[in-house]
Image 1 (cartoon, rainbow, N blue to C red):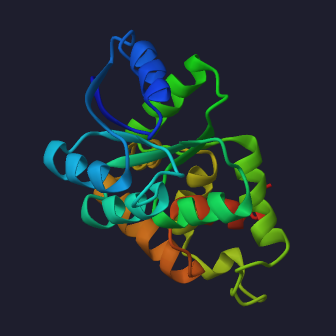
Image 2 (cartoon, rainbow, N blue to C red; image 1 turned 45 degrees about the vertical axis):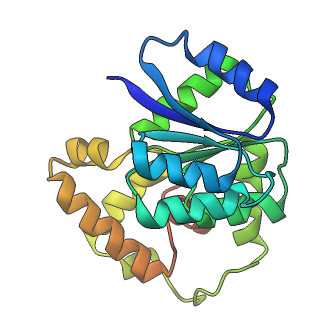
Length: 216
């Protein structure tokens, strides 16, 4: 397994530091670097990497808009936001845009490498502060338009099983192995779960289920 990476940041020193560390990882290859969202979008479309490390605050197109466009055109490419900002104005838009990870630049190098590997496997890893903001969004009702009488019984037995595995951070492939069903079937169940819960991604579904205490 070799994870093909594109690095996006408008600070040369940040790119240099990331490059020095990631080049030491035997299972990772840096295939491109960009300094703004427009350049990142062009690179990603041309190179089709596995994972993109995306800064948020950049001149021209910012990282959130670049993430949204990458997710729309190449949903198989996993975007991890790597930034200095962890607040509601950045975390929630980034996740809604399609980011599968949100980490701060203060992250330990080894933890960053594990976040990249997790994203490659289809798993989500969030900085604790970012995860806390997502949970708080649902706890306070911010942006929560779901009917109060929605229960876990609104899902089929198999959908409940899939959602329970999603809350543990498993990828579709891992869920398929756990439940002994096809990965394509898992994807179908995930789509149905998101439609019933009126959510846009599996991270929101996991947070919603945990907020409701469905599997505790």
